[in-house]
Image (tube, rainbow, N blue to C red; front, side, top):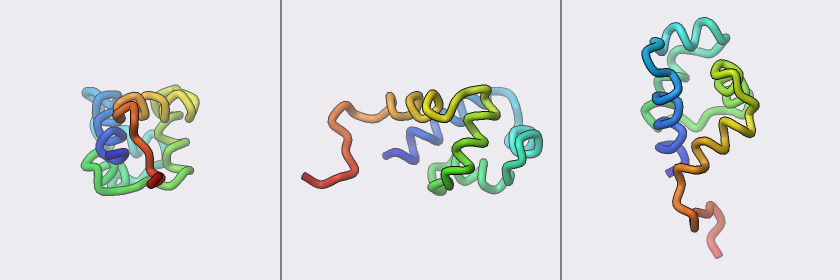
Length: 79
């Protein structure tokens, strides 16, 4: 669920810019951008920082954007 929310936001923010341009201009692997956008790659923390910076955001702002896509009762911890 988190990966789908992340994928949606990266695609949305990237807009018309190609995956290749986003990757090459921001020292991120094009393969990583592709797998993140398909929701099959759980990116490393450093990659999240780079993606956020690519969109001129602080990391917390970027995380908040895709966190807002999750259900209000979402939790990774079983209670």
